[in-house]
Amino acid sequence: MKFIALIFSMAFALSANASLLSFTSDQSDYNTGDLVTVEVFVNDINPAIEFLDAEYTFNDAELEYNLGSFLVTDNVFDNSFFDLDDLIGNSVFLTVEFAPDYTDFLGTSFKLGEITFNALADSVSAGLELASVLAEDGFGDIIEGSDLQVSVSVPAPATLALFPLVAALMFMRRRRNS
Image 1 (cartoon, rainbow, N blue to C red):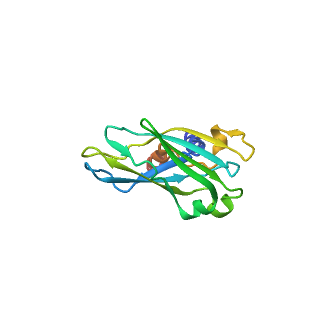
Image 2 (image 1 turned 90 degrees about the horizontal axis):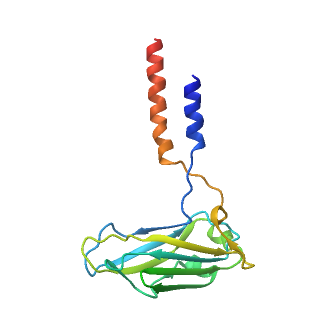
Image 3 (image 1 turned 135 degrees about the horizontal axis):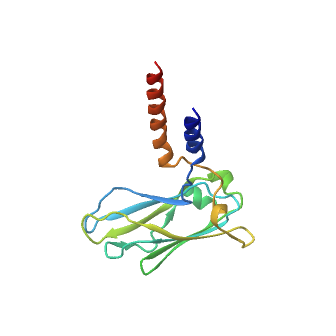
């Protein structure tokens, strides 16, 4: 019984945090000349953040960034002072300065906007990687690390795998006692 209690306590103690910024593409594979549309999402942002600058890297042999294609959603546009995209080598920089109290209107998780690329080869995926994030509050102080997000834990995949194991162990123990 102590073993089962230990398993349950481990299962509830393990957690992982989702990334501050994430993206999804409109399809999984693209061919040469296809337009690749990528939606950028903000996840559980700290409401103190008013300036956000994110660097995404991509494979420039497979994708070509369409400079100026960063379009924020209407809600973000209404609650920000400016948005900008820039390209340096194989890095795309997305910058947004939010209006004060933007989370009152947007919440802490929302779709930031979309960016587009052109596929330069066949069977290409939108393989973007978040290289860095710079965030500042309204006073210009840098916010980093765990302070980028409000505290929201999501179950780690390994934790979810433990539940069927515990259930099976309990079933076997009950069967053996019968």
